[in-house]
Length: 374
Image (cartoon, rainbow, N blue to C red; front, side):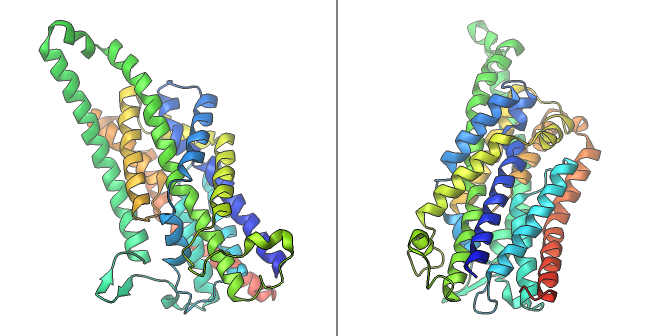
């Protein structure tokens, strides 16, 4: 059983690595598309900021480890988590190969839900849909508040904020032009492109930081969930001395140990450094043609949403927020500039991600159960 637990941790880190290169595009697609940075330099910037951002809080990790699955109803074993991870990895690789910017967040959540439902024989009460506190329904836990509501609201917020930020920037440029005199030169296209070419370095770093602060925490939560499940099953009772760090340092199953945070941060940064060029091409070039001012607006809008969600422990999709922010910027420039056929493919990938990853994980657990491994 100890070997199985170590395999689960390894699979979780593989998922984190894949999440890094799968979602690299989310952090750097715009800065590459606007030619502010070369792909190599953009990837290094994203990797560095992902690493920093991963140490910024653990609210999302706590949601994954203790806010989605009712452990009083379902036993979250190493087999369950392994099947959840394998289902998530499979869907991530399929969408990466097809160049579709699907959500690693929803892939992981879908995989976890599918495997738990399979292990509990279809008992939907194993999933924590909401949370009833002493004062009635609260919003601190549950799939409804932490997954489904943000899944709908964050893309809308990304689109609207992208439009608003771009409109504000255009209004400032127009005001400088009307002011005339020495101010008018700051409204010229050449100066605007030069300024936002520099400003986009800041917004790209902001985006990388926000990506790390939200996405890296999801695998932290999975590893913490696996360790608490193993401790409850007695798997950790006879650990060798060199593995003693696997013992959770707290009886609170929402606590995330420091070694988990550091390991996930480093693995995600390493994955980011490998790049994800197929998805970069879709996000940065196929949806709408971007200028530096557009990239700045899209990255600022998306990063703001990600950090806000991370503060409230919501594992939202980096993919959704940046994609819809780019759409919002494109709409703000010219509604006809958006390429609807590409957007349609992306939206279908969003809709299918949770059920597809959940179905893969459900099937994997059933196969493992049939072979006597679960």
